[in-house]
Structure formats: structure tokens, C-alpha cells
Amino acid sequence: MNIQEYDILNAIFTTTNATQRSLADCSGHSLGIVNRSIKKLTSDGYLTTTMQPTDRAIALYKHSVPQNAIILAAGFGMRMVPINTETPKGLLEIHGEALIERIIRQLHEANIHNIYIVVGFMKEQYEYLIDEYDVTLIVNADYASKNNLHSLNLASEYLKNSYIIPCDIWCKDNPFHTHELYSWYMVSDTQTNESSVRVNRKMELTAISKTAIGNAMIGISYLSENDSSYIQQRLSSLDNDARYDGCFWEEALYNHNRMVIPARIIPGSNAVEINTYEQLRELDEHSNHLQSDILQIAADALNGNQEDICNITVLKKGMTNRSFLFDYQGIKHIMRIPGEGTDQLINRRNEAAVYQTIQDKHICDDIEYINPENGYKLTRFLDNARVCDPLSTEDITKCMNKLRSFHDLKLKVNHRFDLFGQIDFYETLWEGKASVYRDYQKTKAEVFALKNYIDKYAADEVLTHIDAVPDNFLFCTDSSGNEDIRLIDWEYAGMQDPHVDIAMFSIYAFYTREQIDQLIDIYFNGNCPDTTRIKIYCYVAVAGLLWSNWCEYKRNLGVDFGEYSLKQYRYAKEYSRLAKKECIDRNLL
Image (cartoon, rainbow, N blue to C red; front, side):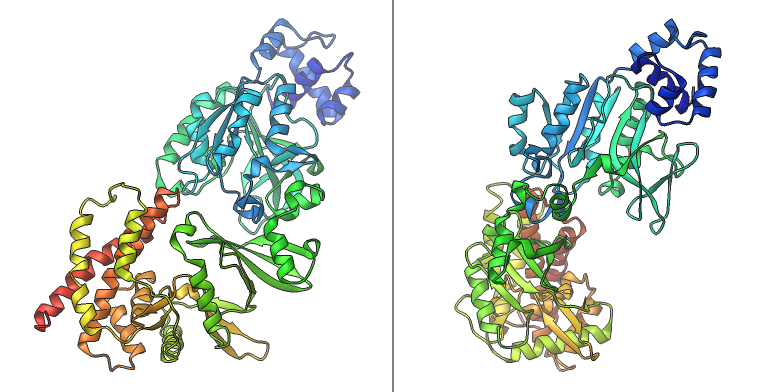
């Protein structure tokens, strides 16, 4: 039986006094397809000559009852800034009704009551659904580092005649039914360049290139019992492969660039995926969630109205913060929102004091608002800007010149960044947990053994950036082609040996010793004393342990930085050994 025949048989069961015309209207197929399908269904024993279902058809229909639904609601919903700082995406309200509650209600209308919801980010806000709707919550503890392929795999044991539903879909009409005769994946007739599939003439979903136009992917799917076992195996296999950590669950549907289940096409107006603040505003301009405190702060800082803020888009999530870009009166601005646990990591009063110190020095980006209590920061967006390429000698030369000229200003603030003290402090944030590194205590002892040498050869302390990494150097070009370099993100800045900034640049760029030496030579114009070079090696080791401890704290909050954290720990170990060896070779200990 092909899809058209399944559709016609289903329409016969759901249509009173069915005629070929009414079946065409109900199924969306042409009269020619309806006529051919009826003939085939009759010859195969599913219909009588009077178009009545036979016992064989009735048995098939009774067996084709959806058993449950799995709702995927674990992710950050990163594109929903600023709303996702207050509410998980599944609980956004459209016309006074939470998205996930609308989905549950529509499932109940189709007599589906076994509902599993995979939660992660702000999972506590979904807890009330257990009592309100008798749902089961499945917790994805790895929501920060893995995508919804992992979420669905956590619920894969329930895959059997199941609906799979993203929590951020608003459907005008109920997409669920009391009977489903075959598996399908829902797309709309809307064409978009954001899709990865296209429907062909056989109703198959075929993969397309990133630049091609395809059918908008709604994301709702139904898996019959016959297809579930294959998908379960695929989910398990892919979830155990780290290369797929960032993948959507749809990856499990592909076989040789084609989905193994057919398309179900709906009109584009029937379903809306709420991915952004703008999409929410378009669907319900009176939604309570549009009244964001963060947007009001931005509007007040610009002496304007929240309604005039538009074109909100999320920027790449940083290691410490979330940020979003928006337009106000034709000018782009960036609003920074502190990330998870940053209240423990950053002293926002100190940060505000740093910006006050450098505000007239043409060093950083243009600050329009900063709150020393919660860390919200508003800056004007720098057009035609790019970050430093750490593999470009020309770029790093310009960056080191900028850094040296900043250090030469010898600016002062009233707080200090204590490298060794911060290592201990981050360790206390682990709340009694041991380090994930089995030789941590040995490594820490070797790093701390460098302190005497550092103290002996430390330069006079000045305001130091501390986080002077390649991504924080912005190369800006104006309309006349003039280039300017701005150093951004001063959260950790404080009084310290300025040569710490050289070490920080190096370890973030994952430099080798040869590259670190080149960077040192550029900063010092080839005149770096051996004692200072060794001191910078010491700072590489200290900074490596510092950020490794920082990563361990963030990992405990569900935020994992993968290769970055491992490499920082390697810098701590390898450069503490190197610095010690260099000191011994030169009789400096």
C-alpha cells in the first residue's frame, strides 16, 4: 500500500457517506489518484465494491492507534533571547496559552494521554505539568552540550506508534489523530533556504545543499511500530558518537541522503515554529512574554520605547554570557546578559569601574549602559568588524602593538586580579567535589611552585585586561577604509603584571611554544629578557590551571567547553615543567 492509498483508506474511515469528490477534498489528492487508489484498495481486499472497509481494513485501522507522544523541551532555545533568560521556550504563551499546554490539549483531543516530556534547561518550570496533566518528565542532564538527538534517545524505549513533537510549535489546527496508518515527518508547503530537505514527487524527503531551497521543516513526526525499532537503533548508535552531540534527532531518519519515512505536507499557515522574539511578536503581539524587563532596560538606556526595538537576533553564545543584537532607530546595538553562574565569577562593580577608567581612552567598544549590580551591558554594534586571526602575523602584530600601548598608559583601578587566589576560589565553587583530573593536586602543586619566581620577576602592576584573547580584539573599518582595533570584554580586568595578557592570548589561541615565543618577540620588539620570557611561561601554566578550574565550575552547571578545558589543563602541566626546566638550565631557581 502506498501513501496515497493509506490516505484514501483513512479518509474513508473518517468521512460519512464518502464519495470520490469528498475523499479528494479530505485527503488533498486529485480525483485521479482517488480513483486509482480505490481500485487498488478494492483489489487488495481492503474495500468492498461499494467502497466499504473490509475486515482486513478494519483490523489494520484498529492496529494503527497512536500509543504516546514524546515532547522535546530540554534545550536553551538560544534564539529566544531575551525571553529565554526568564522562561523556557515551551512555556511561552500564545493568546494566553502556553505552547506546551496547547500541544498537550491537542494530544488529549486525539485520545493520547501517555505523554513524555524531555526537559533540561529550567526543568523545574515544567514540574507542574506532572500534576496538571499527568505527564512524565525525563531529565536530560546534558542539555547544554548535546542537542535533541540525545533527548529523544533518552526516551527511545517509548517509541512505538509515537508522536515526536518539538515544544516550540504552535499549530492552528490539531495535527494529531486517533489513527495513523503510516509513519511521517511534517513539513509545510512554504519554501525556505533554512530547510535541509525537499519533498519529491514520491512524497519522499531528500536532503538538499545548504544553499538550496526546501520545504520548511515543522519538526512534528509520527513513527509507527514498524519503523520504531530501526529509529531506536539509529538513535543509540548516533548518540554514542561524539560527532553527533550537536545534531538534531532528524539525523536518525536519514539513509543515503533520504529520510526513511515520507512527508506529510501542511499549509504554511497551519503551523508556526517559535524560534525568535520576532516570531512570537508576529504571532501574538500582546503576549505577556513580549514585556521583557531586559528590553525595557535597553529602551530606557536609549531614551526610547520598547516597541521601537526590532530585528532581535541572538549572537553566538559566549563562554560567559549570552548576547543579542537589535535595531533601534536604524542603529544596531548589543545587549549582554550574564550567563549561568557568572554572579559567582564576575564582580560587576569592578567591571563597571574598569569601563569608567577606560571610557575616554578609545580602547574598548562604545558602552551605552552597564549595571554594576547584575552585569547587563548595552553597547553600540561595531559595523564592518572582525576578530583577530591568531595565525596571521600581521594581525597579531597589530594586536600586540595595541596591547602594549594600553599597558603603557599605566592605568590604575582599586581592585586586583589575584591569579593564585582565583585558582583557589574557583576550586571552592566545586562545592566539595574532587577535580575530574586524577592528578590535579600534583599539577596544582607544580603550578603553585612557580609563585616565587613570578614574584621575583613581576613587572609593576597596571590595569591588565586578563582576557586579552584573539576573539576580543576587533578590527573595525570605517567607510573611508581606515582601520581601528578595539579590545572588548573587560569583565576580569584588574591590577596585575601586564605580561599576563600575553600568556592569556597564547593559551586561548592554542599556541605551541614556537608560536608563544614569536608572540613574545612581537610584543617586546625582539628584546625580551630571558627572565621575562620564562616568567611568561609561568603565566601560561598558571592561566591554564585558572581557566581549567573555571571550566570545572561551569561543567558542574551543565556547561561544557570540551577541547578548550582539556587544553587549558595541558598548558598547566606542560608549562609548569617547561618553566622549571628553563630555570634550572639557567640557574635561576
